[in-house]
Length: 300
Image (cartoon, rainbow, N blue to C red):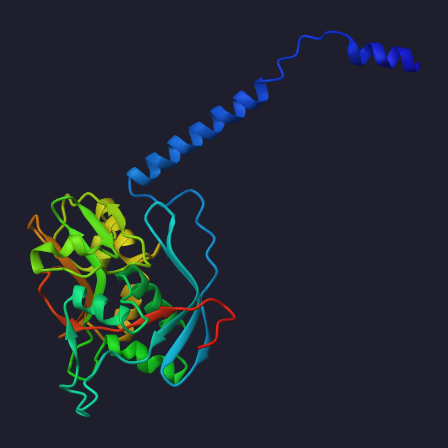
């Protein structure tokens, strides 16, 4: 073929729909999107699990354990909270003038704990972040210093492992609220701004058939599982059952509310069970642990 013949072939008018491929691709993408929404609506995992780098321990200093690659993921597979480095205080807040571990805990409402830690340059972790912290500590429990912190969720010295969290559940609006604002605490006198560096995150749920049951039972219900994934920030909350067994607890249990009020969320061992509580009043107070986010390369 000569150059002129080749040019004729390239310039000859042909009956090709050049936009067809783009339209087909858009239609396929839309069908995938609709299918994914349907999967999520039915309480199933996303077709493609989010890529999540496994957390690891990078440092254990005198007062903190540094965890890397912490990511909380909701029921739709979205990352809702992420830290390259997170420093977790090795102990809860205690009365420095009292050496008796059985009665020296400083106890807070979630609101007061948020204010307290922010005044120290720390913050109170959300329920989701705490569950991811516990998962990371559990994966590294062979280290005695790490196991000591993990075991405080079994017993902090006073016979239980209960910790307050920076999360509320609005049972009327059917929303998990990670990092609530002061407006969420108006009924209990919230005055100071809180969680200024942490965006308020609302995650909806359907509480049909909810009741106080074991975590194993709850995860067999699609609505309940979505709620627990949004609450814990874990795509596989089953790990909390395993951790409950490690604590020597009879069961890991969920405790929900039949009210329409906004309730506090807290977790830890009590009596013979590892509990995920979302049913107490905003005035409820319990022990608290502070954490802080650190950019790689920052000095402390």
